[in-house]
Length: 238
Image 1 (cartoon, rainbow, N blue to C red):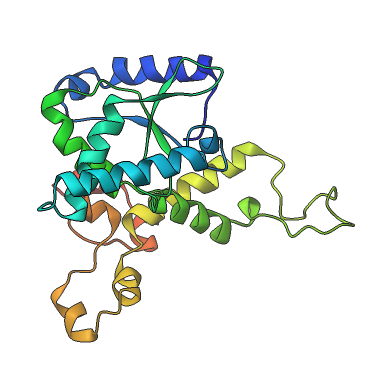
Image 2: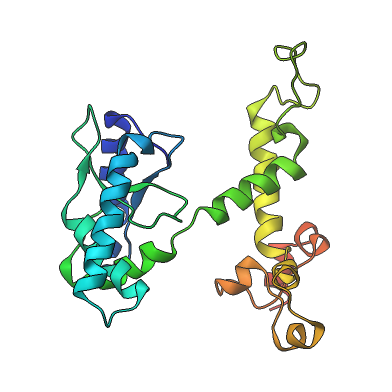
């Protein structure tokens, strides 16, 4: 998520705590609001702060010569969690990411951070990425014409796009159809190929759908399986 107004942030903060209370209390769920440079992250991480993080990284490296670069980064994460930065004009305290290669600039905790869970949380934040969200948006824009960004120019910037949707209800239905197909029918073979795996390596890896990887089903379904599914037929066959 990008920067939210205070009223919306409070609503989201309280709703997560109310709905997922057991998970939060048992350290099974940690929620964060994420901000990027384009959506206001530059207010928290400017050039001066960036240089200070680099200097602090070098100091920690000198103080811990036997630690790896990943270990130094974990120490820097611990310092960032304990020394948060206030967003100008608000009371929200953000954790600025010390990783210059991160896709986000800062995180705002929406759930408490316990000391016993801190180490695991840092490991999660180190590998956190917006790639999955970006990929999902890209798939939606490419596969659903109504959600595709129109090609604009100086002469047609205010012209209605023929593929643009005028009834949000239909977009919601198309999104739901695509969500089911994506989770149960689309497999991850393409990710193996893009990772330069050869055929022999592919043979040792099981091509699975998102639902399989989450343990919801035990096989990849086809569109025909989804369309021809009948709950009553399955019950009668038992």
